[in-house]
Length: 443
Image (cartoon, rainbow, N blue to C red; front, side):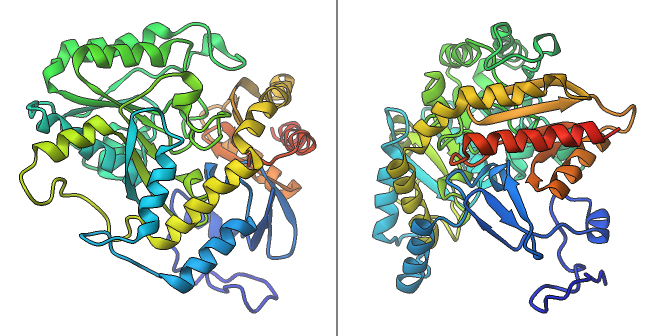
């Protein structure tokens, strides 16, 4: 039993039963950090202390916390339709939401496959890619290509194409997965926006084509901007060249936009921001403003038509989830899209980008900072590791920020930031100021 010392009888007094994900459980339960409620730009601890949210929860609460239009939509739907299966049955609002979603995706995307998380969206996209290649007579294309330092969730498909070693080494991976080089270049530290050099890194896909044969490769999946690896921004022209190589060899290109969609880069999608159209787009997080778990895959119509058209009568794709297009998630998603549009949040994020860049790059002269990277309302402040104790300095900065009233995310020794799109210029300054204070206090 791990007792929690507090006076509030509504709070738990035993932390033992919850095996927390991606957490040092022993350290956390010895000194827990609890969140009791949230509103707009802030979380609040059980004792009422406010925390300025510099991470949109976990890259996901793009419109700010507990927004009333979303809350009311969920409340109303819970009283009308608590659950409806999507296997040979459906509810009308699922179709309406899918239609609204395709309206903000790139031209040619007219199908949506729903799941419940980014991890499920990735595994769904990989399965759809394999099904498509088989449908067009390319059944030998079974190889899936990811990128070093990539994060694509925690399903077996996602960790197989993912490139974060700690997520992979303890598990049996899918056979045939391989990885192209990452794009992080220390020689271009402190670049504002996209680095000038590095387009040629996309040519590493040609190396794998030569190694394995294009006829064995079904799809390549990349994050347009790598989030969990510490906000790695693609060099200018990189995604365009990757698209061209995929086209040349008949390989599908998947953008994992679980983080980058819904205004994070000042546009509906990174595909729109960069002007590069993939074949499939994975979505989650900001899809419902994180109010109800949901994931989705945006699919080009030609891919759907090929899979459905090549199948005999009956089920065309043997894949799906009990909670695909759950009514409460659909309600949250519809209300979220309406809120984004009503408040012009994508354009608002684009308008704040220059101010955001100026603020985060002001940390270049702070103690221990070795790089600052940014695009849209994302930023990574990379710190010098403390000798062999990789991640220790970052963890201390996280705790110091938490203690001073700011929530940041730390991945290794990189402080990763992705605030709600409703952040004010004054709150940007406050957030960066608290990070600077933490950096000045840490050894």
